[in-house]
Image (cartoon, rainbow, N blue to C red; front, side):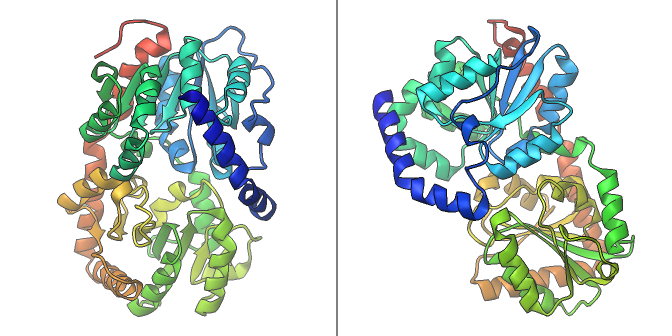
Length: 437
């Protein structure tokens, strides 16, 4: 079974190699850290301290891991922490936010036996924690073979991911027993991983650690910088379009024009860096006076209509400046993105209809009247609906304040997943064989 998996992985790598090379040349993707992905890492000098290897795929997982890293540092100060990522954007963010907490930040290896063994030999982890649900058969098997406790934390399995995994259920039944623990977000997630082949005794439910992200300190210096550069005061009306995908930027720009609110300024934060230039072109065509965050500051920035946030890792810090936040990936059918960070900052939140990546969270927010979720429709209808929702919130302060208060309250009520997770992980981190229930 594993031989077939390795052959298919190699074949897939060869088939996709031209695309990898294209992306590497055009966007710098994949080529970064190629040696690390091949398992070529210098030996970690941990001075005999237990090493916790935390894997975060990309930006979202890295942000969600912040309270967990803080908790491990607090409760297990004698442990070293190393962090791996898969994506370039995740790597950049992890190097920034974990620069004082992690002994090393590096790329996760390709899932061949020899690359995995090289990485494990260099890091020599005492335990491995996988954020959310990344299942790498060869990596899991090698951890089991070397007696390294392995856990999924903040695990989730969307209905779409679950359907895909069911196609390889026979493989997963041999892979998942490698897990010492799976700490899942919801009972639904727990039921799905049990259905895929993990013994129920190894599964626990903690809630979603992303509810705890708001408890970690943001960068007040960054907020102050934005206020100064863009003249954002207590009376500034700012719409943040967060983690957008095509064609959502176009929808947002059309909606902004329909609001007929010249006092409403816009900040667009595309989800993927390779689209920054495409969004810049849209802003050029919009007729708005706009500023690019990565460009040198200019006096005219104080009066710009729109800001293009073409940086990584700054968005979560500046939600506190928003009057309204539209969370992207929800009109484009991507499945939505994290609404908890703007909610924790007390923002009034609007999403599109497609939030299946955060189904349980979005349902809870809709039920509590803590967000506005647009109904399905084509892009023109979405622009009209978004404009109507923005106008409704801008013209009714009481409604907007109520939405903000309910969102923040819902986050407060659901905090605590990190502490529960650490409780379940304690036997793994201390080397005990008796699991906490």
